[in-house]
Image 1: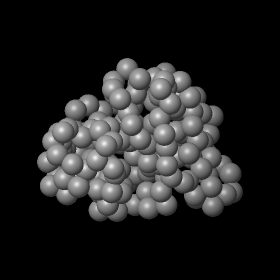
Image 2: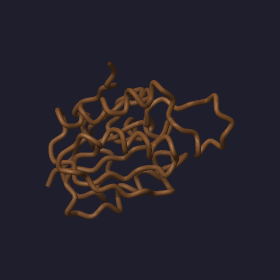
Image 3: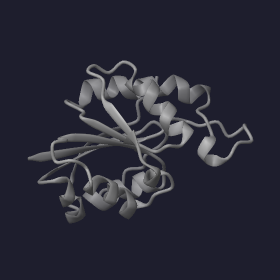
Image 4: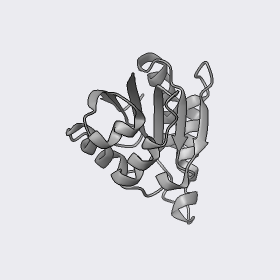
Length: 159
């Protein structure tokens, strides 16, 4: 069975507030662009089964705004390991996905997400804020360690 991994970097965050990094919210541009991620997903990704999201405020807000227009609703779970994770930690999260899930998304942060995409498919794709990369491989989620994913597409949905 083919697995599809959708890698989503959170939308633009607000650096002007004096809050701890994990609690930093989206700024106005981020709140405007996050729903565009959802529209892009609706047009380009079929059958999203699960989202695993960083618990950081900006990542949670991004997914909430992106998913608002998606039908059917996609179940989401929050995983502390995604915050500030490198590619190996992210691969560990992916490896543990249930084999009944065919298409999953990770919502998180750079530089880890950009490094993850490059590690899995061998192509350097800079994931700017609100960027999405779609990877696919045959096999199980545990096969993420084989690093043989194909980059299907990538985009940065903007107005």
